[in-house]
Amino acid sequence: MTQTKAGTGIEADTTVPTIRIVRDFDAAPAQVFRAHVDPGLYAQWVGPRSVTTRILRWDARTGGEWAFANDRGGEEIAAFHGSFHEVRPDERIVWTFTYDGEPDGVALETLTLEELEGGRTRLRVLSVVQDFETRDGMLASGMEVGVDEGYAKLDELLAKES
Image (cartoon, rainbow, N blue to C red; front, side, top):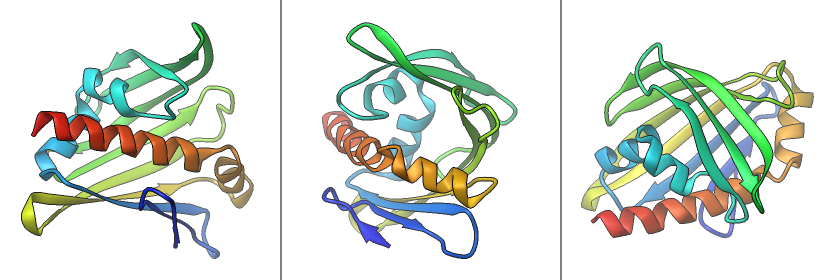
């Protein structure tokens, strides 16, 4: 697993087309969970600092759907959508994640929240895609910057809520 500057572990499996992300937060699982399912909070932290996020649809429940767009300088640069397959409060989210520019490249993501000592949380993300080419394209797209900067913004947001 590679460790990014912000302490996020990102690992690409060599035998199956997956990406694993591990990140610890100085907040309780309920807080980290809420930041993933509340559309107003999610829009504040997801993605790199150079973009703003507009929530288009957000129904964070098992069977719900979601969509958001990223803007830079007032212009849409990317849009994403998916479905919530399982939403288990403070424990787990399973959802699909599709970049509108690659509609056949659907990822199935499982987010799990593990309570750590001292009121901290370990977030684990497993993203499964259809093939290595798709996975490697995600990694080459600058995903690391979006993950690192997004989680740094999440750290800041969680600190304000504490």
